[in-house]
Length: 377
Image (cartoon, rainbow, N blue to C red; front, side, top):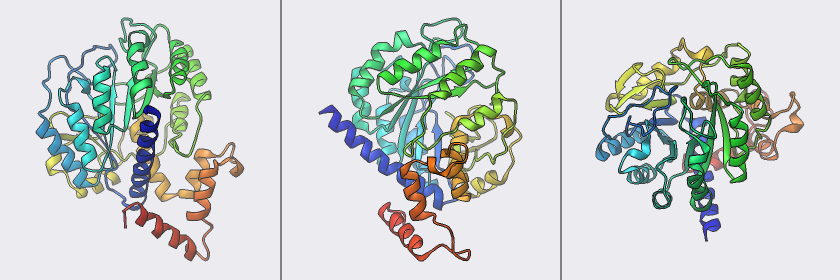
């Protein structure tokens, strides 16, 4: 029964991801993804983290539901619950259910310690789409307690019981005494059927912390194992590779426009590391604010490590330069033959060479048909 439930959930999620993608292509300067903080409190105290405290109360559920409503009204397509540790909030399944009721994709980032079979089942029935578990090392040390061994029973519960997609995220550059643990964790996670992502540690401004030689070697080992597919098109390693090499990235940061970070006080910030900018209450945030922030250059952008913002920017780059970006993401050494089959098919249908500066009539027909099927026209 579980494989069927999981397949049904996957089909539903992929359909709604297609809607998110289409909305991003057709609605410039409209929020795509928002991070929402239900509580700043965390049950751990990792030395490198600046996003938690040990005392903040949970935001009342009706207040959080009103914030979800406002984000939905602004046009957001996905909300990720973060913290602190969001599972400390006593009504997380109810909040996930409300996100889904408003038609948005629902994600959650956790250290995993509070997971239980009952909570996993509650999240299944609430309609959670994604769960990201942050794991830093095999065993707790003085820097991080987000460790594989204490989490193993909970990760096995997820592998057996979760209907939603599970991702294990590894962060390189936190100064852990055994950075090579990340390689073993990645292998264990893949053996359980989980997706694995790699992030870079940042300072209090979101900029890269310098990597040691060992950390650099681990990062390259992990990224060599990364596979690209059309369903998981955000192959965002290039910006990380530039940073590790000491090169700035030239990009338009969409924070405050396509990506919103809403703190526990209900203020909109650029991201978790730029709290205080612009710090406008969500209930007063408008599409005019989004358009202003979209055009505003952020001085922290060239050396920013915040992956979720970079991924959102990639959607905007695809909207502006579709052919160039698809080939850049998926081609090997510029070879168009290496594009995945799904990408080649959609490229041929929706993005054929223009004729005299105009899109062919058949292309316009397929575009209108797809938007109608997705409920966007």
